[in-house]
Length: 525
Image (cartoon, rainbow, N blue to C red; front, side, top):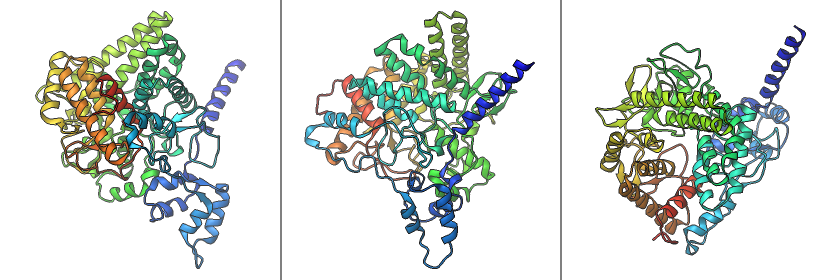
């Protein structure tokens, strides 16, 4: 009995210690001040203030704020600038020599975008990482989860294996510290993850360094899997909790989710403003907004109802095809780690999980009438009926049948392929993850997926259009951008909650990978 009590106490203390590692966010540290700054026009971008570093202890800043607020001559902007250090852009001091070519530019950017290990601090919103890492660029001054896989594709081509090792170790550290990989290493991101690409990163490094990589990261792969499946085992049919959904036939699938029901701190005024027009209860609306941010597709008509309006966002009601393909790959990767270790019982268990999910993907996401893989609304038990590039994910993971892959290839060529590559959806909604924009990660998943089914000509055509657009814009501006207008290649991309960003991690990685794969010459002409 005594030993049982001690064991329980250790478990409780361990949980408490882990909880203590969760940093407080700027809104929690600076109540009132936070809302005042984010609702003002001190900074055009709400992300600026939450990335500021306080010059003094938060309690001292709040004491001064409460004493000075309302007094004659008080100026909020002056107060903020006196008490906080404002962050600069990641690439603001960098200029490139276009004449040196695109490859030289990307090679240089690996250094420009790399950050040293973080010093542990309770003042900054930054969640400290122990190893160097690559940030996307522009306003994105921290590591981002799914961005990093596509950045790693380019790092692999540049044989920057040490950097890849460091980034994987950072992600393993985040899983061990928080139980999952956050959206990014900021306190205000600690309520959600992003598309689970960790297993793809592990497999990527294992290609060059062997099975030892699979063994090294097995504990973190399993922890990430448990995070996504949390609460699933106890779910009744047609019920959901956190990220797990029990489908009508009893199969467990996954959805995007965020644990908070408040406006996003980095987009506070946008969320509060949008909420004024929604008919949803505010906690539901904010959950759906945050879940879409967890998907990486923030925002897209993919997540809206048939009206195509942000106020109707229903992310938590949708079981996404791309997420469940990624979970399939995670299950297969965990199975592979057990196979390497000779644990055939666990190998068979996770292989069976993957096969069950594969059958469910073909059952719930394939719309035979449309000839397309679509998201599935588990509350209405109907297809979402919004065609998107997420349909390419079953090709990337070799889940689709050859006949399905042919229909996807035909649909991509007929409807999605534009002068600069593939549009993300067919809807011109004004949201950045809709037409006319194209994004590097989705170009790559579609191209690689088509190659898996021997649609080589179409894959190369898409890649060529995308590379030519990237390189043409680079020659005009000296920059590689976060996203591109693939419909009218004379225009820049639009939509979203912030200006077009340059850098840019995943664009650099995918471009270099494709240039080498399709043997573009050194100037990409």
